[in-house]
Length: 435
Image 1 (cartoon, rainbow, N blue to C red):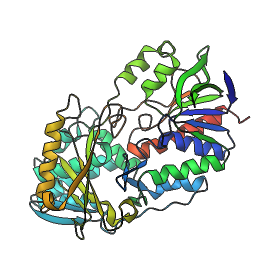
Image 2: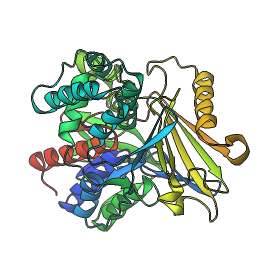
Image 3: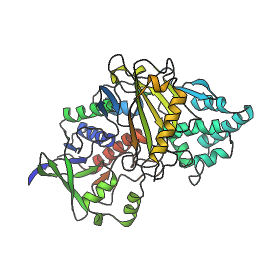
Image 4: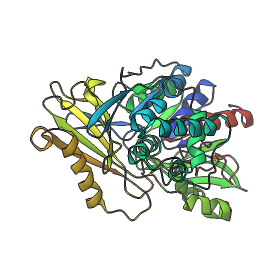
């Protein structure tokens, strides 16, 4: 079998793996990223479909998190920040809400009166500045202590769905407020020019420029171990099996892949139970096209009273390069009634279509439903429910679990993947020296 040597071998090219690879390459490590798919990025990629560019998952990026890691490895970065980021449709009326003071603004709009608004302000402030609510109750249960207003509950459902792909009755209350505190430094949120692939393309370019390798269409067959220590990976490339020897191995695929490839005998019962207990966060995404704008001057509409759709975005307003000239692209995101399977796909999609018809005038005549993405299981929009992450260290010495399922409390989605990649990088640099 052909033998190759790298400092670090990384399985999977999601945002966590690419962050790790780019930062390690900058630090002088020789890194290999092996991806089984024909494209890099996983749920932070952009694919071409009928002349349009469609994100595989991540839509929002930030200068402080995504931009920071790209700039750190020598790549420029652009975030297109909408002037008005949200319109909330409540009782048939649209209310604008800029990011600055977003929560206070929407509590004021959705509250039935000043007393309810003040009650929510006070509870929210206490939870952020003094004592986080218990993780043993859901955010919904915590909210119900202060309000039973459906519009106000719907506003919080939107925030939770946007960031976690869960329902408010599934997210631990304490985890929600930990997120508020952990990511309070993020001020510049927006869209990358052509979706999540813009971010991963930058990182792949940096890895190659700094001396690393990125292979696609290459499946990892085995994680090599000796006496409980990871020693490398066996990869199939162009119908040839290659043994890649490495000081450390990073699994950016689902943790189940690490268990399978390294043999479950190397994992203790507690870790195996945690891995088996991971549940992907489901979501349904509708991609809609049209010949004319369907959302004039209101490029993002949030629906606190929607059956399933919670946000409708007209991508073309921010990123015209995602559509052919003269065409328009809309993405509508929908929650699932219950994030625990089994799911009734037909019911969920049907409720989403009703929301679209109610909120986009003359939908059936003016719009074309191009594609529906159904995220669930290991390919959920998030790899795990928020608040139920694994550590980056596996029981196998030198084998790291990296990605949004291995991030600290309060970090979710693509931001969690970047954070996990940074933590993995820091630990590898502490323990191993580049050859």
